[in-house]
Image (cartoon, rainbow, N blue to C red):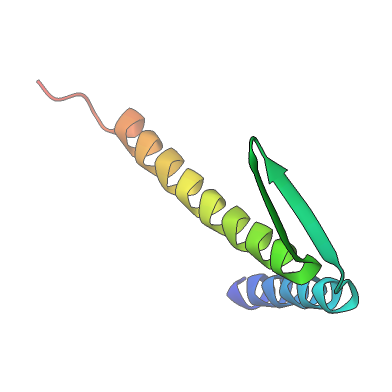
Length: 75
């Protein structure tokens, strides 16, 4: 199963790298009053990393919550 997960991860990473390499134009991101211009591959890489980190954090929170709910009640 780990091998399959690693292959999937490498496939997604390869697709992200290919997408970033083929789209090297500038993109302007605007949030509230801030605006920044960066190349497409930087935006894709940052989104990918932020998605990985938020997914990892959410999985940790859910795992801890599940453990608390599944613990036997203490007297």
